[in-house]
Structure formats: C-alpha cells, structure tokens
Image 1 (cartoon, rainbow, N blue to C red):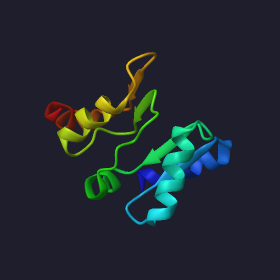
Image 2: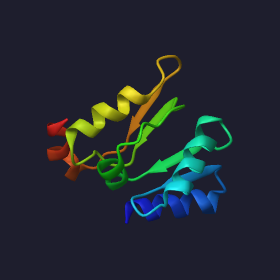
Image 3: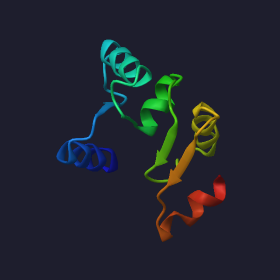
Image 4: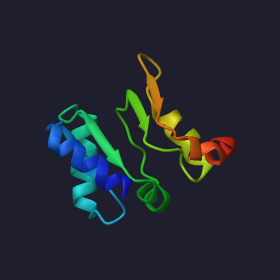
Length: 105
C-alpha cells in the first residue's frame, strides 16, 4: 500500500514520474526506464517486489529515496551502487518501528 500512497501523492502534486512494479508489462518497463534515463521524467518509482523478481539495472539515478528500509538488506546495497558517483544523495524515511529492519542493513 505504500507504493500506491506515494504514487497517488506524486499524481496529486503533478510530479514528473513513471512507475514500475511487478505487474508492469515488458514494453512499459522499457519505456519507463528509457524515459528516466534520458531525463524526460524526474522520478522513477520502483517497488521492492519488482526488483526482487526482475533485477533490472536502473541507470541515470542521481538521487535515491527509500520510503522504508527494504526487507532484504542486499537490496539496499544494490540500489546504492546504482547511483552515479558525482552529485549523489541518499534519503531514507524511517519510523520508530523500522528499528529491526535498519539493523539488518
């Protein structure tokens, strides 16, 4: 439900974004990734389940925002390694009940 909440917020605020999840078809995934890489959209929303099942490499990321810590600690390292070295930033939103998830990372 967090993905839907963030996606709806982005729509409401009219952010320039594309989103992919585990149910997105291959052609839409390719279009979304290309639009993000070429800078046509500012944000690419990706679900953890998408990354778990597909393991696509996301290119063109300069900023990385975690809405919550990933369940698999390896995903955190994988995503951090995708961010370009120059001018990078990382932001993680955590709540008090995320303490156990943070310990895994």
